[in-house]
Length: 135
Image 1: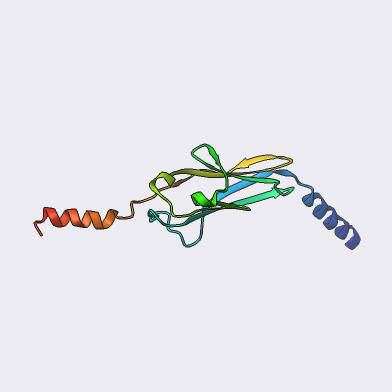
Image 2 (image 1 turned 180 degrees about the vertical axis):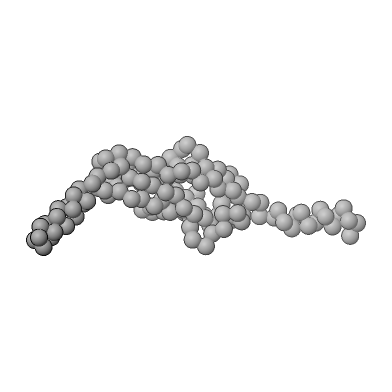
């Protein structure tokens, strides 16, 4: 009985390791970044979390339906499963997502809508209040 249990255990492990599927993909905002307080001039990064067997051969990043390519001179850096946006502008506002592919298919993450606040929004707001209060 003990031997049959061991054989069943190894058979189960072997069967599990043979499960193949298209990638499951999720996009997350980098740690320590408050998605509700991203201002112009800040650096923002995303991670593309992938679960896949076999492992992926390709990870791609998209912005507003267009594929992104790494362009450090424009502040876009793609490295492995990460996307870095340096010194974001209002034009950086929009929908981002990632996809990953393996021999079994392609998986896409949900979209992440990046909001970018004006750098001087709060001080300008306070100045306008002061003007209307007559100070």
